[in-house]
Length: 342
Image: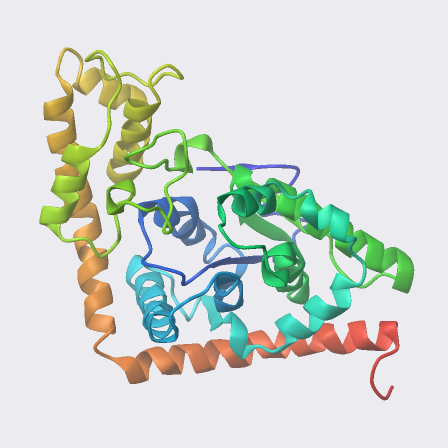
């Protein structure tokens, strides 16, 4: 399910380190699951994985503090309920490892403002925003670089929309190494297959988003079976009745991708199954596929949320493991730069 660009999990027979994270800026949806968590599960056990809940990234736009706290623990519960195992992977909260912000400040001095202003996602968010952009939004890619380089990650699972950010991360690492001597590994991307890119149910031309104005845009991981059926029923479709993946049919192509990922069936198999059948039958079956797929995850997360002490323990254990690596990297960086008492 992962297309690897210039990289694989057998890098000179060494254990490969992976870093990735999701913002707790809202309820996780199937786009987050299939675009990230689903891929992490395939890496877990094959690589040394660091999976973070990146709450510092989340506050680049205002978050209600109480809601943010709830979403942090919900995100952790969904990680665990989905199969991310704290015995196999390091799961931690970004803001609890202070080295992220510290390294971000150091690396920020190697990046030009004009470079950050050229980032496609920054320009898109500026256009959408009614307010002037803040420093956090502008420096988002530098914090992302800190996240990745702090753990000396070999590989970073990213979607096509994050390719530009990762290229900047690589450039920052190269600049630091050239200026101060070999310090950071140059991370390589794990580019996901197109089928893992889930588009909005109400707009198949844009990615599914937690910040979408309409809840009909996404299927949340904690949606009830009734809500899942309702949202799939309301999902937009293309003209005609043929159930076929095609650039000319972006809506049904998106629904086919979702069906394939949730069922494990190939697109061709699904197309053949619904040959000469209408959208109504297809969407009804898709809804049931999703209900069956998501129910164990939703129910598992609900049970975990009743165990706050256990969730806090997971965070604390992950923090200790992450800090061990982070502090080692930061000490080397500070020494190279000349900071502190060396």
